[in-house]
Amino acid sequence: MLPLVVVFGSPHVDLANSGTNNNHNGDVQNGTLQKMIVENASVTMQLDLNGLNGSNSLVARPVTLQFSVAANSFFPILVFNDLLRAVKPGSMALIPQNVPALPVRLGRSVKQLVVEKLPSNRSFGLAVRDSKTGFTFFDVAGGDYDYNANARSLGIADGRLLISKEAGPDIIVGDLPDVVQIDPAVGSQVGLGVATTSCNNGDQPVNFFALPNTDHPFFPQNLYRKSGGVDNLERFEQIGQSWIKHTFGADELDECNLGCNTNNCTQFSQLCPGCADPYLADENGWYDLLGSRAWANPFTGAFPSTAANHNGHAHDGVSHRIRVNVADLNTTLNAGATYFAEAQYLDPLEYTWCQTHPGQCNMYNNASYHQFLVNGTTNFTFSPLGQTVRMEPAIKAWTGATVNQLEPDQGNDGVWFMGYKVTNPTNGVYHYEYALYNQNLDRSIQSFSVPLGAGANLSNIGFHAPPQEPGWANDGTLNNQGYSSMPWTVTQAAASITWNTETFGQNQNANAIRFGTLYNFRFDADQPPQTTNATVGFFKTGSPMIVAIQAPAGGSTPTPDTNRHGHADSNTESNCITKVQPFGKASSHSPAAPLALLRAERESKEFVTNRFLLLSSK
Image (tube, rainbow, N blue to C red):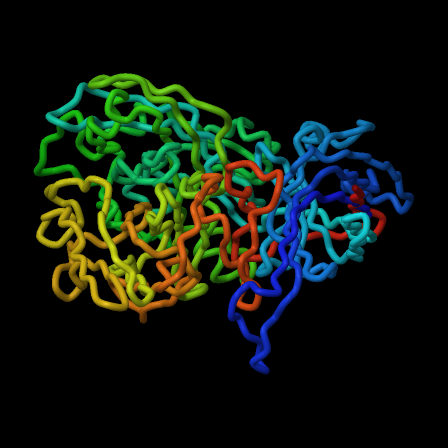
């Protein structure tokens, strides 16, 4: 049982004259909308230790855990006319008030647990997980939600705690502890490597057979920069990418704190459940184990046995590594910028297992990122800041942006992310920044079109993409020419602005947004934002899709972004309620995105004596 009581603090807005959003009868929807975050809260968990330890005993061993909640935790709710309208994705950090004897794994994590509100497409509304390792201990089923408008408090009682486990093979990036410049710069570019620790977060072994065997994970390495604007938070750009590293031979360590279990597993040839396999940063720059991304399908994990054939070409200090322009790292030229390394382990077994075990599909949580401090102007050193953020792509580090995951063809292809942010740097000027990140979508992205309100005037139109590898013998591209670096063509019409690269039919090596890459599109406008839909077209196959963004409206009075939250001081919350002020007590950081974005439900075992209660009061 998990009882939970939360007290919220919030401003509220009178929407009686808030715009022209109509309901189905043509009447204006008026009222007061409140968006709140946690002021204080308490959580109680009642557990059966025999059940947690896997005991066959019919006698329960109950234990009660009491927690307070960190103030100002981002666990927002929406209240309309004093009625609970929605609990939005977010999380609450738990502070234990008592620490009884617990199973080892839970005991290690008890001081870093969070209660997380999951997206609406998940089977469970809440989960309890370790904030550092990302491991989910419990899914919370059911629960009675009771909102008290006078006290601004929300209680959730009688939620059932279900022991959660990732079923099937589930390889993730557990840590990215280091970044190194491997050799001196070559011309205007340097080659980098990222240290990676892979973890098997599932309950099945993952094969690590060496090439030419094709049953092993591979991973790209990427580097990103957050910069621009008065606060250096305006844009999030990819400034480097590598070829993919082909793995072999697993070390079976417990560096991910998942409880390495080598039973019924062939050590070294497989990564056993709960076990970890680290690579040093310079190892991830060794040429012989790097192969072109062009050979791989990022969703199925398929590639040919010749995917790392280096015959017919010679290497320099940048070849195939994370290729970055020196100017993008030079600290003199990038004062105040922040940098993030990312890796994504992709594995054919996850896909084949998913095909034969519907509901056990773990191909969507393979990317993790870590922030680094950069020093240098021509030779660079990197220092890690904070912890690796597991099972989230680096685009989630874009402060103040809205980032949404999209899946054009569920079950048949991967996912990509639409990120956008609108700032108001000067009176009457709005900066629109868009980032499209392809995580593991094989079809790739070929065009991006933004609608414009009547009378919107644009300036400073821009495009950004990371450097591409040149063509190499046996690189898997058409005629070994490499992928194009040609900037996308931009076309502005009265009602839209569109960027596009060549179609697949025109040029198979066109500069499409392929897996593990992020491209940026931007402009300034003299009109404030409104919620609308962009159109995204694909490169290899599939019809265009519509995605939610913000774009210039027509004819409205600009509203300055005085608080620099990354959007105007009024924005659209829904189709029937507008001009919702940003909630009080929020930090400048975007909400912590929910961990579980998988398309598969976890396999859960229920112990009816486990209960969840969330309580909150003012």
